[in-house]
Image 1 (spheres, rainbow, N blue to C red):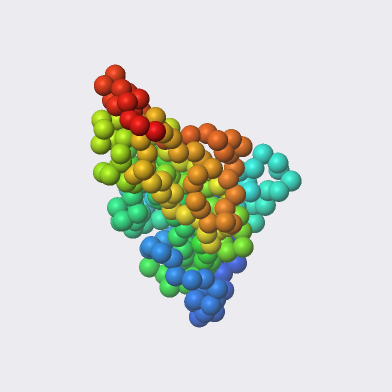
Image 2 (tube, rainbow, N blue to C red; image 1 turned 90 degrees about the vertical axis):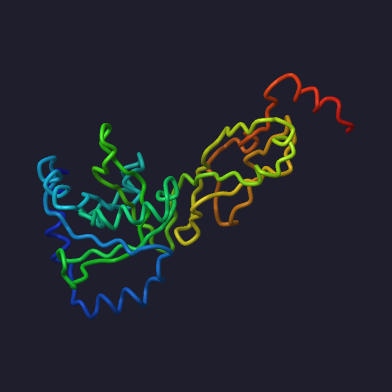
Length: 253
């Protein structure tokens, strides 16, 4: 494995083709990403010292590979598109400001791998999905980022964040209840072209004691829920004290 990582950047350069052909292939094969196109260059070796040098130069170490490499069944593993990269620190910070966490890891981006910093030679391009950001535990600075390929026609397992809306008009909250957020995300098997950045759950009609279940969430029909328990609640309006509980009991049915 270590030998492969050292040779990743070299193999990528050997696979390069002419800039004109690359640009033509890029625009004919992929649609524009919703956000920025992430720019990256290969790195030929790994290690803490090299990564520290990259970060000191304003770059963030990264790796991109097929999500199948994360599967326990090694039969499906294919390292053919696994590349060591560095990305521009300023660009990543700009993207994080516009997309915001946790939506970054459920948003598909376009990736362009250039031959070097400032180079116009395009080595490879495609769509990717961030799956992990590693940060320094003390400073919070980004140490490295893990991406997986998310080309059209492929399916990916994605933890999709839940966003609750309608709290300002929620009946139960207006009576003094409290929103108990039981789940913060749902895991789906998603076609790459239909990955939702978030799932919205409307709580405006909930009263005290009422819940919304996983089965109640509406998503694109191509998404497959990976949870086996669809009757698990996502949220519930709970009484904060005896008085709010009595309000619910005294109301006519």
